[in-house]
Image 1 (cartoon, rainbow, N blue to C red):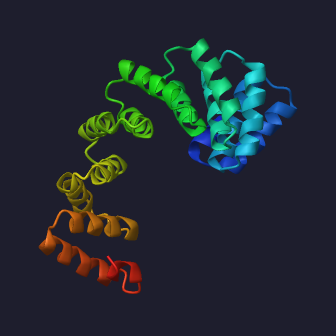
Image 2: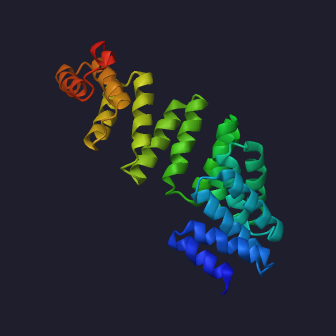
Length: 244
């Protein structure tokens, strides 16, 4: 039995326990292409949300195949999910140096810089991503978050509009646009965004509470009354709604 390829097939079919067993046996047998075996073990443990073991196996994969950009990317992603941000940054920079066209690594690097509070570097990275992938809605969204942190509200709104234009179902981008407009006093624009979200079926407590605050500021009494009645019916024990 070719335990490496059978293990990979089991991983692809979703039988992670069998995949792990076969891949470990392949490694114990000192089989060929051990980098691939460790890499697929990393994928298995990542799917099981055991990021410590995923990281350990990606590290071994990189030891055997140091120039495989996908192995490095997955290692960087594992570090990111563990919030080992410095290690994630260094690994992703190495990935990009090996494969400058690896857009997922560049985008993730921007997220790392964002988490580290390095907004200028994050903005530069997201802008680089968008130069090569102008239809990358998530890159617009995250650059919008960066611009907001830097105090560039209008640029943030422009990026959010681009993200929504690419993906009209991008709820996070629509909500972020509503929040920025609300803070800027553009209450009617904020209300328009809230209506879009509402019409897509979103009825979480936090959203409905925000929607009510927007409607109160935009002086839309009829819509406010309708939404408040619905919210009170959905969340009958909430005193916060009664106090809006």
